[in-house]
Length: 420
Ligand code: GLV
Ligand code: MN
Ligand code: MN
Ligand code: MN
Image 1: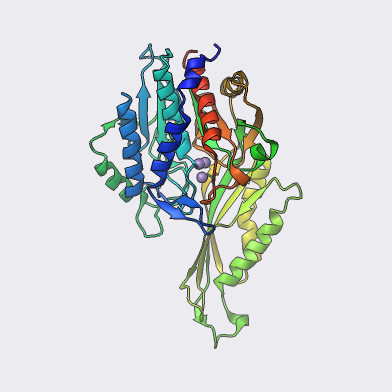
Image 2 (image 1 turned 90 degrees about the vertical axis):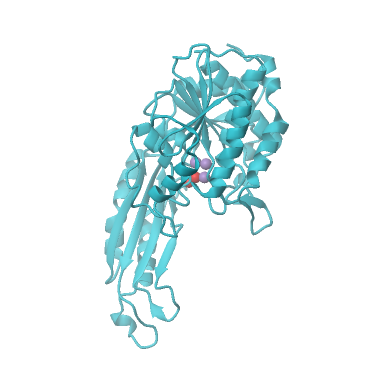
């Protein structure tokens, strides 16, 4: 089915941008370079305020609103066949602590914009379309990320709700209980589902589309990720009196460990991604040898074998590098690389082509909720360019017209899939 011109015209660049800017006020921060960013931790009062805004817009459109036990939020547009499996679209509304105004939230706003355009243009869809805001995609407050979509895909609560804590010591379970109480007025739905297809809109978060002057990224898959926590335990000692040779210094052993890991993770092709992004030192004072260091590892690669081999080598590499401290390595996220389905990939590409937009096929370096939909339904994503490829940073930016082009492609692809 070719895209009705009235559907494309019904997507409003202005309305979508205004909604994004209104949402960006909730948790507004200023970056080091003066850029307007966002810090909206998952399950926080700010997150709830943002959700209330979105709920208000969805209800204003006549969409039904439901929420499941992990807080995934759904807005439903009915199709002509109520029983048909829905087409699902959306992303997340939580942000990184030093985040931008578009990562995640644009996918939810774009989903709403697409559905609004479909309704206003009077485009009939056989299947229902549901817009979802997944809980805790970022993993910024509670790690790992994608807890909402993983729980939904597995039809069961994420494990470790009682063990995962934020930096204040609040468990995910406690934050969720408080959150659910604050949203007790919303209709409940069971966890899990079987969509006909899933299509997520997201900013690229990398430099490719801008560098090549291309409007639309047709995402073909997502590289794999593994997250670890490393705890190195030694013994505190006086910085002035204890001989260096006898110390069990957790900071020095962390440096040895990371140096050895950097060697393990060296990649002349620059494809591999290895990040130590969070370090905690105890007792954290300048004149005491630290007895404990806790640091995180984020390791990603598109090749499954390499992801497994190098990931499995992390713990032995650390063990043979340290001198005297004890080591505990815990893996807390293991997502294999995924390939998206031709049904959805083609729908995105065809929509871009039909609208005269340039596009290219590309993999995603970031992980996304879409990757957990792959086992349950045909899934895919659409990207728009990110200025300077910057993300997880307040300087993150995509222009109103770039985002509108993305929403038009999303609307057309959703309409097409919803009539299959
Ligand atoms: C998502 O935010 C990621 O880290 O890829
Ligand atoms: Mn995101
Ligand atoms: Mn992100
Ligand atoms: Mn993501």
